[in-house]
Image (tube, rainbow over all chains, first blue to last red):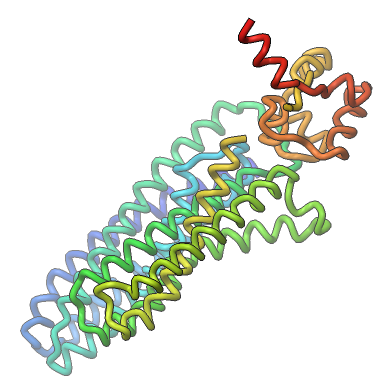
Length: 300
Length: 77
């Protein structure tokens, strides 16, 4: 595993550097195209040729993400001590790869809408923010991979672990990150002043994208524990922490939802409530459960 | 009432076995051993017996009850 960790690390570093260059290249191409789309000018064959480079760039960035996530999962297996930076990198990596797929949709929307003479400034902002997030993920991976390679170089003797706790704790941290980001996104939709039809269309896909990192880490974790017997799924302390966290989640979610119902969701029209209640409940449960598991886990 | 233990001492006597190695031998996480050792988590009967069997001692030799009333009274004195 040490060798695979080293190889994927080095490949990720190389791909990361190339991806970063491609992101800068994409940014320059976008800065050339954006004024044209905003003036609703017809995009010629030269733009199509430029878009081929953008496509190649996306492919390289995608391969980098796959390689990095593979390296991160190996790090989770290899390094026995939990690291919050690593947990955040798993969360950011999965989110970034989903946003990368979203970029294709954004570019297609920009193309269609500019042809129809519609405003595309919103899509451009999302595209630039996504590129910034990809670049930030590359930087984060650079730091993590270099530090992991240095540890591997030192050849420290690593103690074997029969029952893993790193993935369990990492999953809770990712759940917490997802919950926080979910609440931020809901608040952003509420205060953004976007037309209701956009909010209505975007709220569920956004929520699904935000929850995906938790979903993937749980699948990864299940792939370990499903090999064993049901009674061996959890360590007895983990089971106790989960039970306590479940109770806290029940009380918090029930009380907060009841409070919101009684207060009749102040300042929210019925149409907003219809589309907001489920993502709100989802993020509330995720945040409360994950943070309480972590609290009981640390408390002892 | 609290459950005290001599796990730290037993580990020391057992070639200073690490928490992780003990956790592996018993089939729990390192954090569970850490929490039991610091009296923050009360193990199940099964786990208590597993620990006792690992160290070759009886459960009573590893675990004991701390009477909090006595402790308070002692502190007052």
